[in-house]
Length: 173
Image (tube, rainbow, N blue to C red; front, side):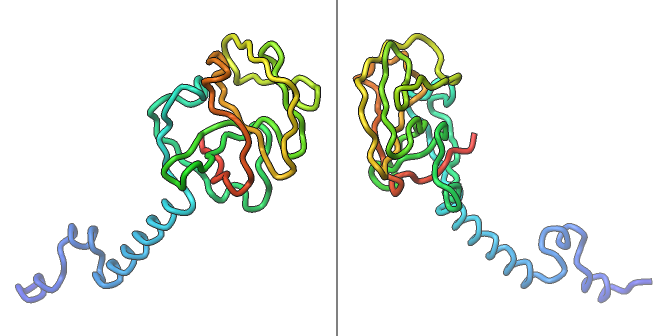
């Protein structure tokens, strides 16, 4: 039979579940996890809010998405990737799709995208598009990006070139 001294020495099951048998070890583990999650949210998976309609139907307005900042450590960005492009630090970014790689030529004719004179199949583009843009080369260290919502007027659509250093990472859908 347990005495009052023995019962007081054994923590209750709730304390054991929340804190564990050794509170100091639990505190150290908790601090390590807080630091890892904090670093991860700053340097690995960065949350961003999508604002605007230029990526409809792929990305909805006012949704939170995450950018994988380690996606391009082992390989360069690929055509078709949706990326976050730094415009003014990490506070202002564009979410766009890479459509042309370094050294290629891009053009739009009757809404169809042409890469090096060949039409590019884009199943993610919905709706009518009547964009016209004469052939234009992409620089040797640049990527050409554009949104999926091509029903917007060409002049109102943020698009253009970005060097590899401006691409923060790949969006996780």
